[in-house]
Image (cartoon, rainbow, N blue to C red; front, side, top):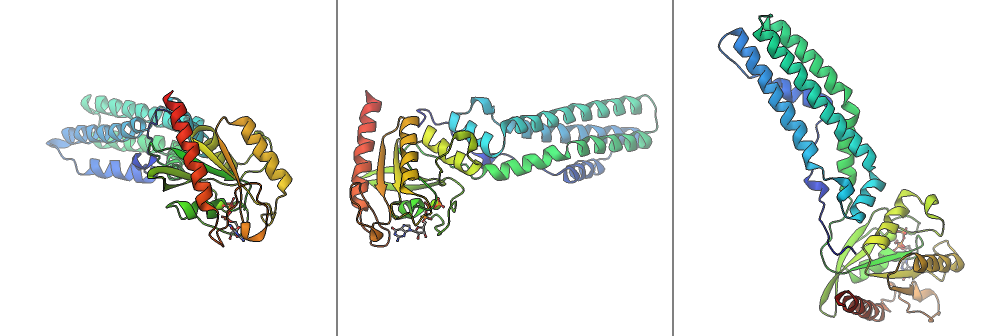
Length: 320
Ligand SMILES: Nc1nc2c(ncn2[C@@H]2O[C@H](COP(=O)(O)OP(=O)(O)OP(=O)(O)O)[C@@H](O)[C@H]2O)c(=O)[nH]1
Ligand SMILES: [Mg+2]
């Protein structure tokens, strides 16, 4: 967990219009403008267009944070699900479009003032602006899509974070649903959980956040898919304590050997205390680790007290 958790809320990013919508909005606003005489009317329309576009583009550009300076979790998750390079490129295209449009408008103003036919100038300005906006239509679509995708990024509080991890289909979401407020989807196939879910729970009178992550396979980082990378980022940046779930019945579809190998890998990779537990204790008798069952509702108290102890130690270590 980062000591300073800057909250980035993609929901607060302004809505982006598609190219046709933006052209429509700007031209509609200009059409309502009047003036004394044809010349003044044309100048007023151009000045309205200038304001509409610069307000619009500047509002979007300035609402995006400087992605490189975000805390690492946000920076890396945004890079994983959207791509910071593409975001930057799109915002750069908006900035280019804004200055190109302002130049066209300024030139139009000079032409009208210099005595050219106001209607002809306006028609040419409208045509050239439409062409500029159409040129950034892919970037506008991308920004709409980016905001949509970023909605899945969780908002976290300052409470300690317990991250639940393990192979796909071992019972992570079932565990999280039993000890916190989150109600994730549970199903008998792997990779049911594709996003990061944050639930809230309480242990020994203290609240904590419990993160349900997508399943991980035991394989090198460069082979991991985007869904797995989200789980890795939670382990890397958010976890104060990790609960690693092993399904010894192998009904999840993966061998104990592979599940243990991933546990060892996580221990090596992340310097966060790990509690490893067995799931589905209604189906087996292994008790060399704490074991829980959502069917028999057993084992939760023992695991909760281990989490409590782990968080207490962590708090003590952070104070020193
Ligand atoms: N018998 C038994 N089945 C369980 C238990 N916990 C979970 N299951 C079953 O195991 C399957 C997977 O459960 P999930 O909680 O979705 O597993 P997950 O680890 O979140 O799976 P992914 O999100 O796909 O990685 C479901 O069919 C559950 O009903 C348990 O304690 N006992
Ligand atoms: Mg799940």
